[in-house]
Image (cartoon, rainbow, N blue to C red; front, side, top):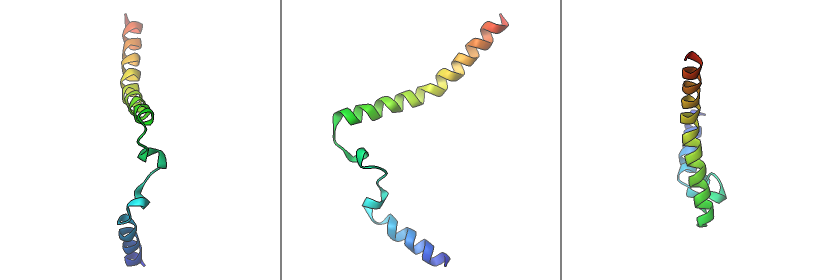
Length: 63
């Protein structure tokens, strides 16, 4: 049973279309690309801004 599961996973990994997460990721539209880039930047900056905001709040609270 385990060998069949491994063989099925290996067979599916060889099919490129099975690995696509969504059809919008493969669109060559500049607007879509800029949207993905913008959201990536926002999601990357959000934790840093939250930690910095909490640090500033604690600093102002202690002074």
